[in-house]
Length: 93
Image 1 (cartoon, rainbow, N blue to C red):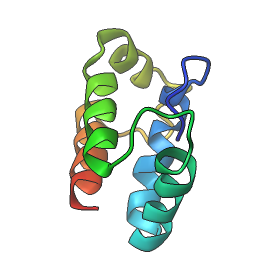
Image 2: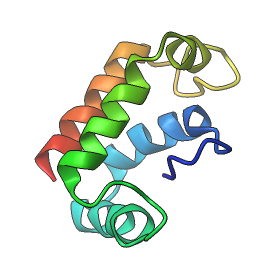
Image 3: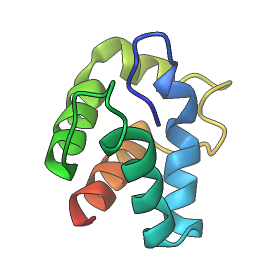
Image 4: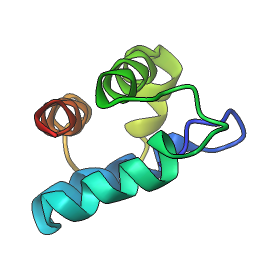
């Protein structure tokens, strides 16, 4: 999950929610470390920074609206449930 402006994070949100229930915590933490924390081009340097950044993105009205579209919400889950699930998971890492 990259935070760069040119990436479409909302397209991957349901994948992350799906991964939470189907992946091992160590694997997800390693991915976050590799692709965010260890990337010198990223601003986040700890899990609190990752959490703050994702929380900020999740509060954006346009982002939330895009998550609710049928082509993005392939899990057919409530948007608030998906976002809360991801934030709760990240908080525990």
